[in-house]
Length: 306
Image (tube, rainbow, N blue to C red; front, side, top):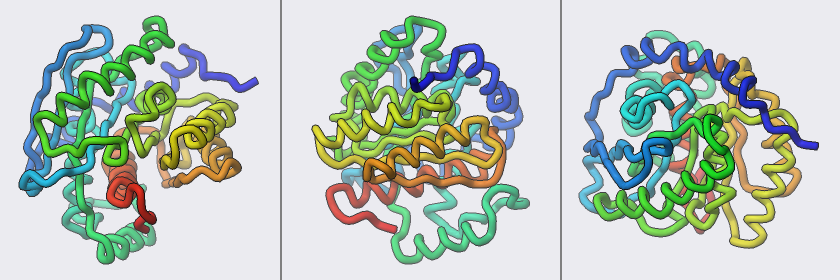
């Protein structure tokens, strides 16, 4: 029987990511050379969330852009403000975006511990052929669903994202309408919730992924079969699985990718050296995630970009 990681085990294993929150804030200070930021409050509940940050590229000039929803990890679930700003202040979202928009992607890094030179060079070649296009970034507060009725919380949170938050974002930004222009991803706990939200509302998202997703061993077969059933019913989707060599969820994520491949589902597995923490996200994890979604959402309905 596939097993879901127990609540206590999940919270314990996530401690490494949440413990570096204070230093992460200092190392990835909020700067907005490429984006307009909106601190968006929408109807919701205190438990599930009512707040999101929305980052719109300054160079969009009103042209329709893809939209990417990003869910944060456990360490910021205790406070709506920390959750809404986690990707920008702690996970290197804006600096990674700027590095992709203005390569080389190793610019500004004092030393490269996790983004190795051969991979950086491969990214540079990709960007030379197909420059980074960009997207509207939506970073909502993500609840700790294990502190409530988990299944009901996931149902309600998925509905809130699709029926309340995304329509409001589209009314205020040049975010494109429709599934083909919409992606979903998350880090750690947020990766688990990303996969769960997609299963509940697959009509809303073309891409779905997880960065060091906090999933249990043995669950990959179940997820892959559910994703396969969705594709059979609704049409093509693309999946992103990203982990690191010392991630406690490495084996579970690699197994998920293996099961996706067995079912012929369109996906990418990316494994970078490093641990499960914020410095890894800032240097390589967030950058790889943004690059993948940019390629998939830019080519939705057509052949993929490399």
